[in-house]
Image (cartoon, rainbow, N blue to C red; front, top):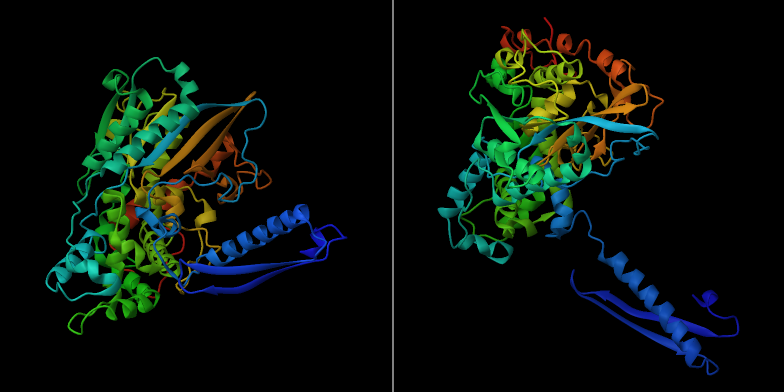
Length: 518
């Protein structure tokens, strides 16, 4: 510090008694010792430098440890997996380094596969089912909690089920506005109403209306667009929820990963948390890791629906990382490369995307495509400048698998804490209001494809087969090469066999490529 001062000044700055008595309160006392020749000007210089050193000390001591309990939403929400509120990814997050379009290129068509906005919990056993179980357990044991858990003495479940929450509606409307700001110029080529498609469940239909309100404006209503809802019953051919058409996915033995395995990962991840919680209750009530997982889920859901939650200040960052990793494993092993139906669930949308690029209808289906709808330009138009398809988190995960984007194909760690360099992170891939955007780009006499996931440019050069040049660093792939890269996509999905075939999986056989052959 002395070296930064004028050479003729003999000065010492002592920083004394730096102690931290609590996480939030920092006591720092410093003393300046001046040479008698140091007048007002140099004293001010010393004070300024001491202030900078003091500020640096505060910043360093203020960083949150991964093993420190925190309620900082900006940090913990990064690990909320598929129930995270939407956040844009940095354009380079998936490894693409050149993010600007080449000179002379222009976007001429856009396809959006969008997830619905934030919702209440579903009825799934590990989601809303676990939350309800926990709520009943708490309500039968009131007045048993103290310390950080004292709020449970009066807490009750205030969440609905399945439907869109107000913040979710707003996020979808903002998405429509953002899309208009980024791509609105392509409307110059639109001469008719746009057909928007949605998976036929209420939260998706409302999300579509919200998005359209943001894009078209509230006064335009259906003068500018119409909405086509695809069937949502088990067995329905619905490319926006391809799992519905895959019968074997609903047979328990078809899963290579189930909720018991997910909870077994959470057991060590949440062990310390359950010990903390059991120290704040009487001996008649015992928390386990499944309760702790419900409490983490409640934090995210209450925050989305109610804008705050007492559950959010109970966990460390590492415990939140464990929460995300458990759901990473679940998604990967049910909807992606780790499940024999992973490709089959997403192949229908891939086939539709290719058909739009090739300007052709689909008259025969061997996947989740509804050929009755896709054989008519009334219900499967081929001339729109943009397409909006309101879908689900699991469907986006399966589409990425069916495309063979091997950037996301990896051997996920089952250790805790999880590694920092893992590519497959659901928080970045399918949060609420996630969107996979496929751009058709014209560059002079050639056309290219570029794909984005929540604004992060996808590395198409990682598509298997090397059709999309590995030398390109901008994420672009010529449309001819992109189509060539997908020529075997339907064959690899093997839809009829994996979804309807009579087979039994050996528990020792590990699925690694999202498909299965006899």
